[in-house]
Length: 278
Image 1 (tube, rainbow, N blue to C red):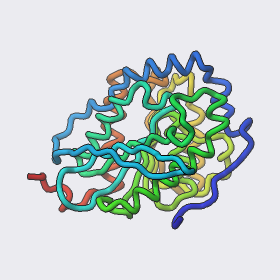
Image 2: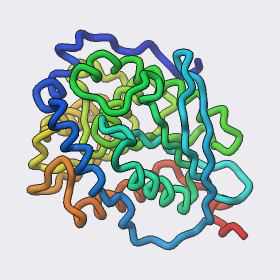
Image 3: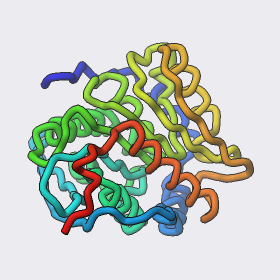
Image 4: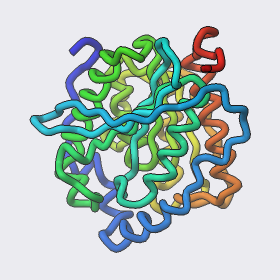
């Protein structure tokens, strides 16, 4: 499809080194439980639009991929943001991502929560699952972009991706090879090892990371920042001192506000889109 290039298919021992050293099935379950505490919606900003939620889908690799769509309840085309979950999937923490998507739609953007695990019938992913399915998920995010640009409510020239943890890594790798991605927000994520020195492009990127993250070390966020600068981009990085992979409510509220403001700035909802729906 237009704008898509071939995925990187490096050796899993290189591409997934941090997952194999950081996440065991037990730790993953612990992370999933903590994900339920993630308050991605504590953003003090006025509501502009009423929001309608619908369920949609597209096909990737012969499988039906579910999408939960949050859109302003008014006519017109709007910027779009793909919202990508972590390795915990939507088993735990789904409500927090829904409320974050709701907040995006209230501010004049369409949010697509993509259940990319549907491609591989995955509920949550440990190290073996990630090693086995990573590239299928990358391809699924590419198909999600095809779905997005063809959507009748979307301004195809204004598309961003928000990713948390594994979702952030996938957002970065997708943006590296697909020119249709205009901006990326990485929360507690970074850049896969196999992209080191091989990142092809870097759109405007916001990097949000806890300095004491023991699951995705801060060096992954710093590597992403370096690579983006090498390509001439000007990434914005906000480190939260003493915060881990799952941040405190105060830090997460700040990260949420920064993410929404960054997406608004880069995707620029039109003046028509900013009118309050009736």
